Length: 251
Image (cartoon, rainbow, N blue to C red):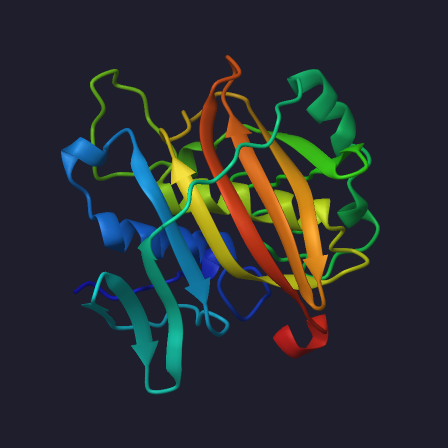
């Protein structure tokens, strides 16, 4: 089996992997790179057991349909085909999403400013710079145009368009859910993510991502997010479980 490897670029907290990118990398290991999966992936559930280490290969093994990444310190993550469907979050327009970005609460207070997905400290072309702001009481939205540096390099599509990689697509769906639960007031890290990817997002095309809060239970926050293309079609959808934490323990 191939190792799980999270390059330092794809951090969430400064010393560990971005949850969404890590989950997407696990999903990619489940599916591999066959041509028949070039446009759609069945829903995969990934559970993060501890902060993913950066720049450190973690061996993986498969048993009874579950892929496990583990090293001498224990299990990092598990991945398996999801047993329940994921439900899309309703769309908003690009105009609405752009206006919402100005209200992104992460501008004023952010638990992890280095985050690959939503960190304001990340430069254009380095991080995704997705900044979801409120559009309703339980929903946030932002626009995102995949940068050429996010392109996957293992498959050539018959339409000759470059597309963001599968782990980057999962990363784009990660933090919009968290900000729907207000990470400024409720710092949290990703615990579980189930995503269905219908197609990979086109590099250079403006997309809209919408996050939604769906519930709370103790330290757990339940959210969802959907990525839409410029024609309003669903690109991918995810549901998350977040665990509230003290950010200082992740630095």
